[in-house]
Image (cartoon, rainbow, N blue to C red; front, side, top):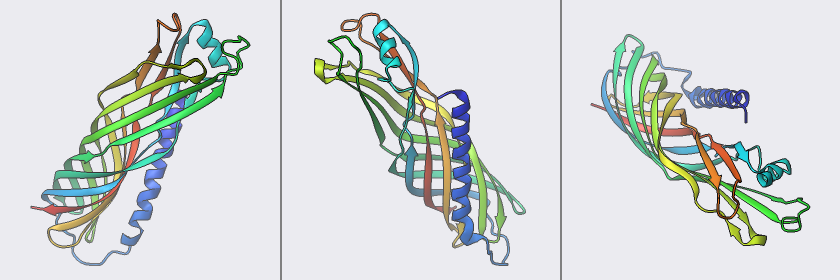
Length: 264
């Protein structure tokens, strides 16, 4: 995946976010003609929803006569991805400042998730060398996201009892990226080729919140998070000296969730 493809994918994700919130907001277009609700002050809330990611990985640098031939023979994909979603639950706190119909705010939240994704790729080796010819070559690309923390600015517009908002800011989560190679015909399984740690990045999204009572509101939002890319460098100098291959993992995903907030 080149930079142009990555930009196009993120632009497409933004369009998906906008479309989702347009559908969510359809029921709130016909607003009551009552006074503008007061959204100023602090609040806390709970959320439930889904995390979605592609687990995308892109082929990086490779070296060695054997690995070069393997890449040319298509045993290692140039890129791989696949959609997967898991449930999340979260806690959040925030504060709103209101001037007329316009809202500015600051929000922090923690989403509890255990989102793991594993993608498999398998090809038969056409290498004419009798040792490798016809050998199944299996690779695996895994990404695990831990709890996601965000600190965001929020700005919006009030119509009746409904707040339409956009949000964006910082995001962080523990992430593990794992690349593995198995050659069953040779009885070979790769050592631990992985990188793990806390990654930082950004998050942005849009949503709406509907005041049900003076203090209680319901909300729906979709947010895109994008954490730092990680490159896993695969080497086994004992079994395959001089051979190496790397994969860059795109640690991004989308949150779609609903929640309830209580104002103080």
